[in-house]
Length: 114
Length: 113
Image 1 (cartoon, helix red, strand yellow):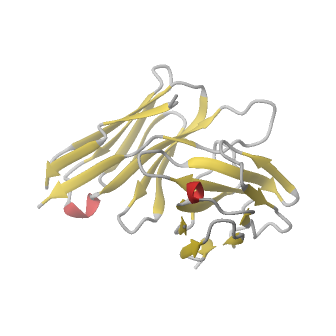
Image 2 (tube, rainbow over the protein chains, first blue to last red):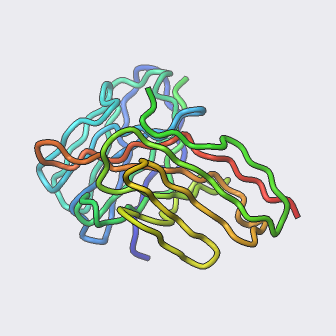
């Protein structure tokens, strides 16, 4: 099924560990983005990409790295996990990110940092 | 500061009732999205609006750009409509490049049989 695939669905990390959250889409969408969702707060943009080789920071980028070597993949790296990064992470894609295009969301990754 | 405000935060209604969820925003936007998040956590895009009104089944979304306000209506509500409904806006781009969505905190809707 076409869509956005996120892996893993659940992850527990120890403080200081690093890991990569994977996001892949097969819709040939140029625009991809990562959000985190915390209780009592709306989703917040971490990083986004408007195409292969192009990334930019969102509202809450500290502690995260991204790269976009292909149109399909947009991994999110936690460099040194902290308890404050405990959250649910969503990847989303859109044809161009422009106002005329809807977003497709992945199913989310629930991350706990202990 | 929260650029997107939703009301109510929580809403419990009986099956069959007409539901209205409101969204107000403070910035200039190029589009507004209504999203649905079920208890399992997945997020589904319901509508994308830049003007006027859209209808899909029992769901209706309207937007008033001048008043910076949008509403999501559910007619003949059903327990399966129970979910979190999220309003998100795409701020008008400045200097090129897409800058993602800004989200409201969501409205928790429970429809009781």
